[in-house]
Length: 139
Image 1 (cartoon, rainbow, N blue to C red):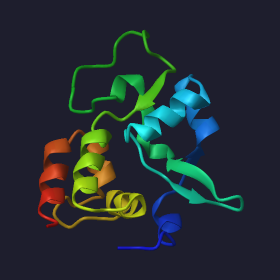
Image 2 (image 1 turned 90 degrees about the vertical axis):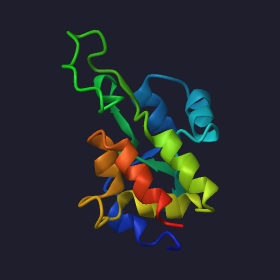
Image 3 (image 1 turned 180 degrees about the vertical axis):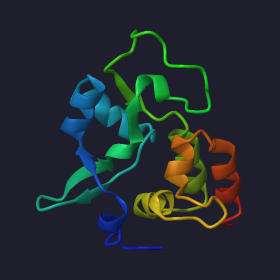
C-alpha cells in the first residue's frame, strides 16, 4: 500500500482530536476513546505531526446509518453529528487482514473498480455489505 504520502491527495479534510470532540459535542477524552475503540482510524500529519482523522468519518446524526432509508426525523438530532456506524466493522475487517491505519485510510478513500466509487463513498451511501465483500476479496 502506501507510506501515507498519498493520503494528502485522497482525503480532502481532516480533524484533530479537539476538532473531533467539538464536532461530536463531547470531550477530547471521549474523542480519544472513539479512536481507541477503533470506531475511527487516523494518522499523524501536518507540521506538528498531530493525530488526525478524515472529516468524512463524521456525519449528521440522522445519517449515522445510511442504509436506513426513512426520512430524517423532525429536528430531534438537528445539528448533531456522529461517527458513521458502518466504519467500525469495516476497520476491524481490514485490521484483521493486517492493514495499517494508513493503509486502511488509503483503501477507504481510493477508487475501487468493483464498487465504481471509493469504499468510503459506498459506505456513506449505505452499501456496507458490498464494501465488506470487496474488502474480503483483498486476500
